[in-house]
Image (cartoon, rainbow, N blue to C red; front, side, top):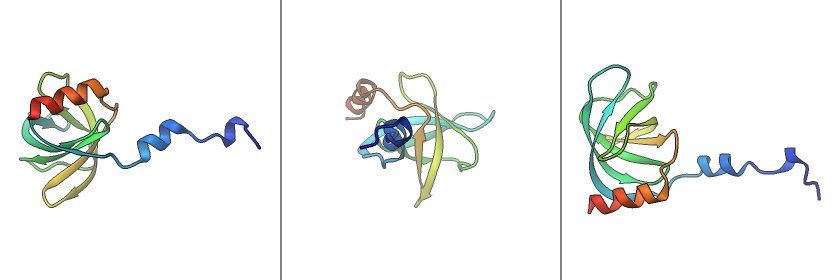
Length: 108
């Protein structure tokens, strides 16, 4: 068997490419792109990797998204898809599981 470094799977990349398993939840958030003002958005589902949200204002898929969640510093995310008024975003840095569980408790 060849165990050279170039043959080893990149576990971090594989984990980031995998589809997130979203947990339904309802949270109020705010979004912003560029230097515009903050706009309200409702989070419908979330995982440690990203979220599904319903924005009030249109979101440009070509720009990074800043997301402000209750009690957290603003997060950077990228828009992955838009469907039926919902926007799927992936966080630039995944949430720690304890932070995710705290947000899930707040949502219920």
